[in-house]
Amino acid sequence: MAVGTSDTTIKNHAAFIWSVADLLRGDYKQSEYGKVILPLTVLRRLDCVLESTKAAVLERAAKLRGQVENVGPVLRSEAGEQFYNISPLDFRRLLDDSTQVSGNLRAYIAGFSPEAREVIDKFDFDTQITRLDRADLLYMVLSKFANIDLHPSVVSNIEMGYL
Image 1 (spheres, rainbow, N blue to C red):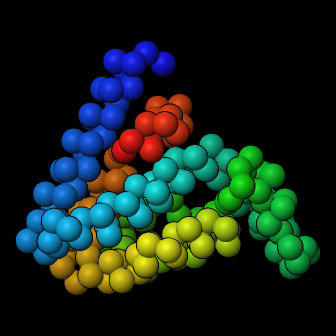
Image 2 (cartoon, rainbow, N blue to C red):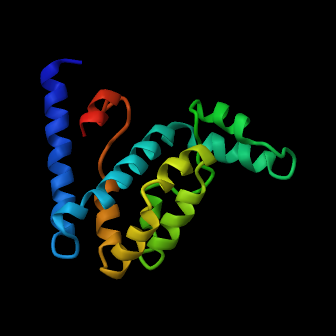
């Protein structure tokens, strides 16, 4: 990847993050923006990474339900990653029912493999889900994140680090 492309990608994504920060302004202090932006960036990246194998993982999980006690290794293999998600939801489907966004987001997070959930739990994001929902910001903020493409083919791991 050319350096110019990388710089452009990083600048575009930084501009996106500031657009999300604009939504938070007033309900969040500037020092608190990271409590929302960081976990959602991680969740969106995980969502993008798993997108191509999501259907296969869901199908395999359904077949294994009640048959195999430790499905983790099989589902990680199916996902081709060290983590997976067995929720039928993805970032775009979280928004299908605007009255259930917080519940859908929590169910989506709960669908991640224990290893991924452990990382997500370190953000204490459940508190922010409640706060965003009470401020009527959760749907708008998730809508923004659902529209950003953080697929590894678009945003490299190095670029994600800068982001």
